[in-house]
Amino acid sequence: MKVTLTFDNGPTRPVTSQVLDTLGRYGVPATFFPVAQKLRQPGNRTAAERAAAEGHWIGNHTLTHAVQLGDTDDPHLPEREIGEAQEIIGDLASPGRLFRPYGRGGILDRKLLSPVGLTYLQQNAYTCVLWNCVPHDWDQPDRWVDRGLQDVTTRDWSLVVLHDLPTGAVDHLPRFIDGLLELGADIVQDFPPSCVPLRAGRLTLPVDHLLPA
Ligand SMILES: [Zn+2]
Image (cartoon, rainbow, N blue to C red; front, side, top):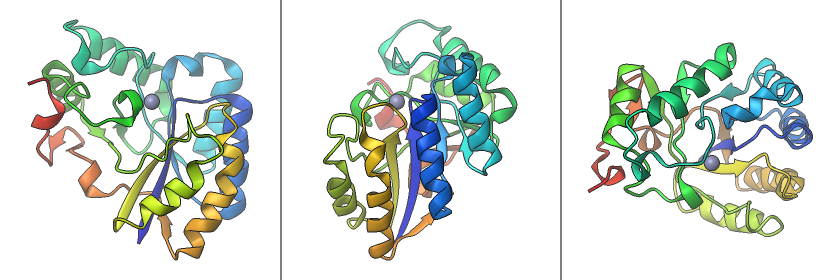
């Protein structure tokens, strides 16, 4: 059983640093998907730089995390929400251009992508990283660990979405990692192919169910 850890919506300096301390202690690699406008604050940028320096991957989780691609008719949204975000992330981006769309509440539905958004991602060689395990750390900050540990046993390779936000949830990250190790999970940095519908701009899975009807 494999498990991949991702941390979205940060960086939030003290929380991201706490996550990095924990990951470092266990020697576990992860990927961070920052909301790019947060990187404009120097302390947050420093936290993301530390993450990259310690071998974690850094992706793009939109500029503002405010509008879903499939929930607007604005044809310029992808340039702004994806393109400007990527410019801010700059040389922290690795490996290649990883993009995770804003999925309100972790739901993979028809608002996740849009035709213009998909075209933008394809033309600019993005790899789109979705997920298959959402333990709800943001609204159950003290209860997500058991939910997450139970859920990862239901599939061969889980891509877990957590958040480096000041909810208190990451206080329980050591218990989660201990639990994964007790389950015999191999904690890896790569993503399960079933969660990556677009690789360097090339469609590898059908995405019709993620586009407006
Ligand atoms: Zn998010």
